[in-house]
Image (tube, rainbow, N blue to C red; front, side, top):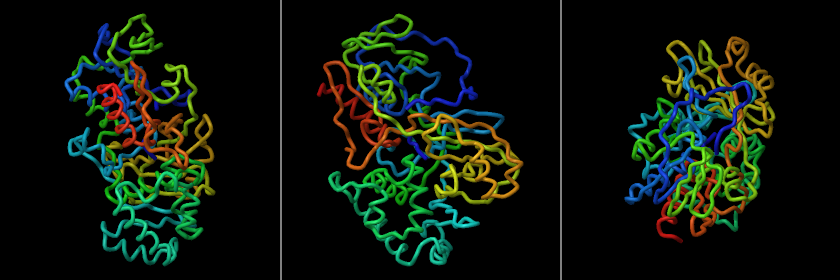
Length: 434
């Protein structure tokens, strides 16, 4: 789901590029140069600017945001990939005005597919009726309910999580040690956590999963009313207007000099590389680790299939759709009046979205009404997340030469939180020199 989310590569039939307009050339020198205007790069640039440092921010694309981008089509708001903001991320308060984002929260809970119907499992704090629904559902055994409450309480009492790095294990093994039932793992935990970590099943890090669950318990997931692009746009608006340079292709770095595709050079005291991992590896002549990809498809409908504002979870055995959200239920601004917007998504290792299989799955779930749904856009977000395996460090040592520092959620955790933390740390390291 997230967010979290390096740059985007869409299917060949997709064309979201705006008509290119000339932008002012960057200066020939600057105290600091940040390469990449995703959330890590924007955070690094903001941190440097707040410390009174001169900074130039270079971005290859036609807008800031990196993976966090939004497009508009016939009145629909389409985030590039199914993305949400976890409002309990600790770092976002340092760089975002949440009130100004005009957030639209998802229901605090999930809508789980079980057999021929969905069952909403909502946070009991959000609705008294959720308590009765939780007690009645056959998705969770009485023991599952007790263990779920105990896990939530343990996570709330520990801001750093309940697993140390040396104790980390796969999500699947962790759930077994917690003695959750096989049915709850299949119907609830696997689609929830594999959808977030973009894993094929439950091979992701339990340590990371616990922190994500903690954030979901503390605060709701949400989207800005005008789309996820509002997040990087708000951050960019806090930088000097002449510090951001779009469509600036960096060809190479030599010492403390940045060489652009047009032949221009920028001399800097220090450089922060805040790109996706493959691009950073290219600039450093290093080998990039593989990333995890997400497929997604947006559909318009005349009527919503239900009135739920929760993220819908589907077992992996049912088909490629792991998560479904009726975005116009959550944020009416995402669809024109009289229309409904539905997004389906899931992890993938393919280069093409599994549209035929997804549409068959949606028809099995929602019935013949899906035959009238119109496909608006679809795509693959390649390198949507860096791979984070059990036992990985939450903060990889920030590589530092005399001239270059690295930022990006591939240095921390694959999330908006991780991107911002890495950007701040990289900027602080660049200022201090070590």
